[in-house]
Image (tube, rainbow over all chains, first blue to last red; front, side):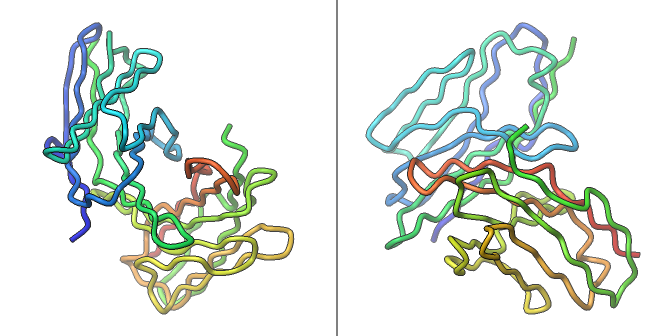
Length: 114
Length: 113
């Protein structure tokens, strides 16, 4: 089947610590993975993406790791700040003919303690 | 600001009623997606339009319908509303070429009493 799930529904970290949010997927045909951040009362916002031919990609304070062997995706946030408190969604993109299909995980809530 | 505009931001109505949610995509984006987000649930894909035509269908109920107009704005119609339809409804758009990144609006919060 096609599913994207999350290992941890909630994550609480201390300000300044690093955060790791995990995501499992099951579709080997996924060619592209995206992390979105959703702050309270707002729509999801793109954070970082990674193609299936890569295993690591870095952004500003964020790193996404992709392990295709075990179909695992993670988002690492360095020096977590209060503004990072949000729900984080992973999504996998599957090419389905002339269309792209985005499958979303359930989300992980990140709480940053000052 | 993502560039995607949704109206209304909040809507309260009664069971059995019908509502219309409106979405204006980012300038230049041809695809519009509708998502439903209920409490304790992730984003449920409802439907996608591309340049006026339905492109993909997700878990959209028969009581719901959508369309994309020639000016590319989209409307989501929800009828015979039930309590369980209370949710945040998001619209997203994506550019015609690229990796498929979605740009989300701020959402329309529907409360059915």
